[in-house]
Amino acid sequence: MVQLNQKYADKGLVMLGISLDTSAGDMQQGIRQGNLSWPMHLDIGGQMSRAFGVDSIPRTFLLGPDGTLLWTGHPAAGLDAAIEKAFKEHPPQLVDPKLLEEANGVLDQIDSKLKAGDAAAAIKLLGKVPAAARKDADFNTRDADVQKKLESAGDAMLAQVDPLIQKGDYVAAIAKLNDLSAALTGTPVGVKARQKLNELKSRPEAKAALLTAEKESRAGDVLTSAQALQSQKKDAQAYERFEEVVKEFPDTDAARTASDSIKAYEHDKPELVKKVSDSAAAGKAKAALSMADSYRKSQRTDLARAKYQSVIKEFPGTPYAETAKKALEEMDK
Image (cartoon, rainbow, N blue to C red; front, side, top):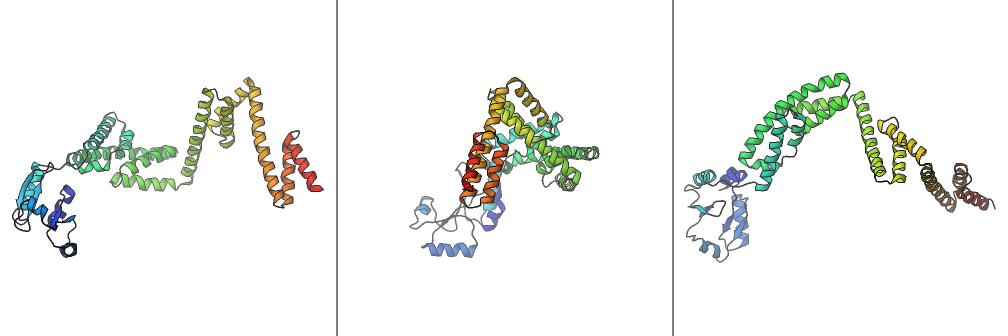
């Protein structure tokens, strides 16, 4: 029984044991001695054994996926052959039909992308295949066939990497290698891609290119956010976000676009620009005064004086500068 369980468990066989021992302790001892790994139920009083008509032990009942009794008898009297027959004539459904439908849909998309010559998109889709779907024999066969096609496409993509590296297009090369190593993990192509990726990432020039690309990407995200605010007529917030792009991501395409938008605001809506600038200045001034007050309360007078003076210098002619002057006068008394 232990050998049968080891042989068929991964294929969908589920064993359940019914013990006729007189105590749980005796049952546990039998489990340990027999090295039994399946769930056991203690049938005290024999209610279940009577319901199944058990008149001798051991007695085995083989049930199909729909609950139909397919075979019964002593396990040594043909159970192995009965299980083999059951798997052929009453195969278990190991995967939820909806999950299987979803997984086949992904394979359909992969086939479609491959036929269209878009191997990169096909390889990315492989990561969306639910791993559980591979428990289904028919799906597993189809999945293996698709993976062979993808490996062939992967070889072609891998061949495109070296020319990209030679041209200095490290970002595109790294993107291809990332896709290949992630989607084809464990395959020869995936291993080659991972090795080449690690080697390429160690190059200073590739690292610099990646940092630049990441900077451009972040700048683009902030720029998109600013443009969205602008389209929603939230000009004050948009202006602040455009300024953020210019200050945080200089020398990027996004910063140049943001700079043009700032100039347009300054020309078309100078009153809005002043309001935003005044608001930003007020925020900085209040924060500086708060820090200076904190230094003063903690008797760190040198730091407090320096911070008050910085407010006077940075925000001349404002109420914040006057507040800082008064604070300094009080400290001098």
